Length: 196
Image 1: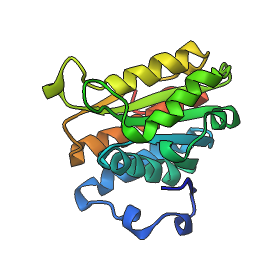
Image 2 (image 1 turned 30 degrees about the horizontal axis):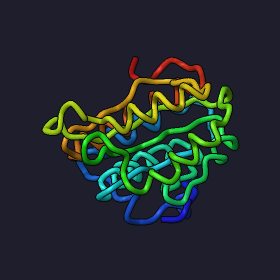
Image 3 (image 1 turned 60 degrees about the vertical axis):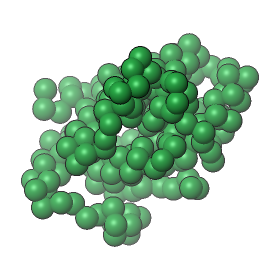
Image 4 (image 1 turned 90 degrees about the vertical axis):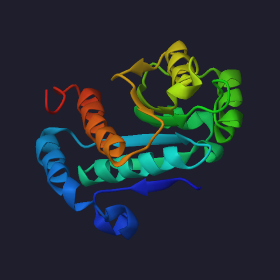
């Protein structure tokens, strides 16, 4: 999957992503209204996925944030290069965990190069969206923890708590991830998080 941009204009969002379930329509409107005061920003979203579930959640989050007016650069980690982290001030990294607490296959090359380059990231604020399965404890969402620790080691600042999905994603998980992403953006901007 090549990188793509999600913007406020509906022409930049696929019709598939614009379909909002009827029972979630009110929540979607609330998100837009409450976050109206959050400054618009350019966000980088990096996606680590093994089966496609993480990409599904991340696409919904990107569409949600685009509707709030943010510009989203959505990049599969297989297509990413560590230097891209120097081009943005705000990052949402979404990843699943594979095997015994391992990174998904599409993230391995990126992570190895990232460790080698060890870029200075004090300019970067980030938040982690992690998918896992408690059936595989103690490895639940371990890949998210690995990225969290490594980004922090290189100076990046964690702006908001990690959002974890267990054995999903369900529709409720996705709605929760969108709610969380609005809070993340408010934290990035220094504003009080929406919905308190």
